[in-house]
Length: 89
Image 1 (tube, rainbow, N blue to C red):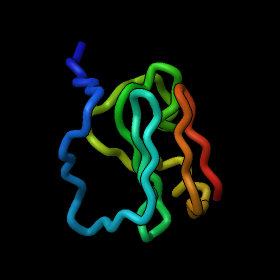
Image 2: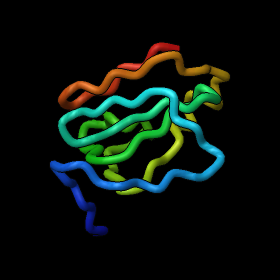
Image 3: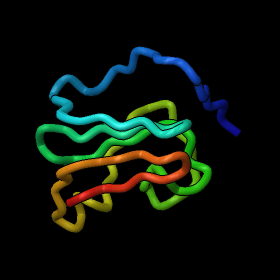
Image 4: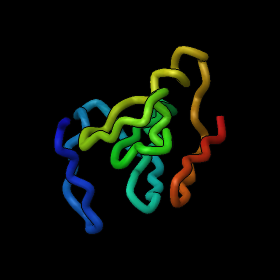
């Protein structure tokens, strides 16, 4: 199994240069950002599916939530809870 670094302190994260972040929210062990293009990117601990990628896999790298893009939904707001992520589209 791949090692995932779950950190309880801030760490620098490299996002693709073309992304401009307009909002960010942090849960207890995961983070989500909304881009100016209204896409959602998530990373961190994903045991309960809170990253929104259709699985329970954790990730150290920010990944776009493709389900929202496939449905043509644009993200307006994101709020991370302890083990959840709420998205307003």
